[in-house]
Image 1 (cartoon, rainbow, N blue to C red):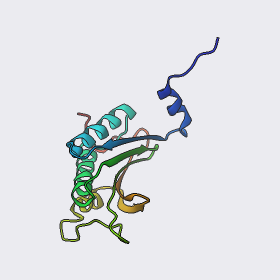
Image 2: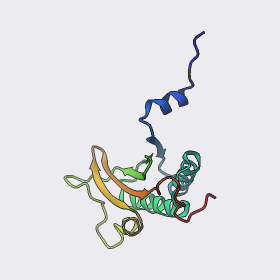
Image 3: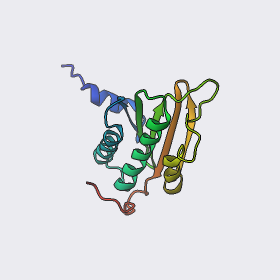
Length: 154
């Protein structure tokens, strides 16, 4: 007898051990920051990631708001990845103007969301993509057996 795995199970087994990844499109006009926070919280619970839930939620909210304010006003893409030791969140937008891939706004508020990530995350930054840019943060996961970093699941 031949049995078939569900599509979700096949995708999970196709990933390298310990690596999980989810991408979600955040449509223009929807409450993108709130949806991104909900997705990150759900992923943290589902994958049992031992990081501070509140910090992860605040940082993703700031990245989404930064991308929505400074991007081209189109859909955003939220990418969440986790290995055994790192939880990485990226927000992709279409902020390409001519030869520049930097944010359209250049005043003091342009990178405000990124400053919080730089101060609180293990790693953060931005990079160019074929369609614009991505901003990201990384939270370090404590080693197995260590106490989580303070946040509690909602």
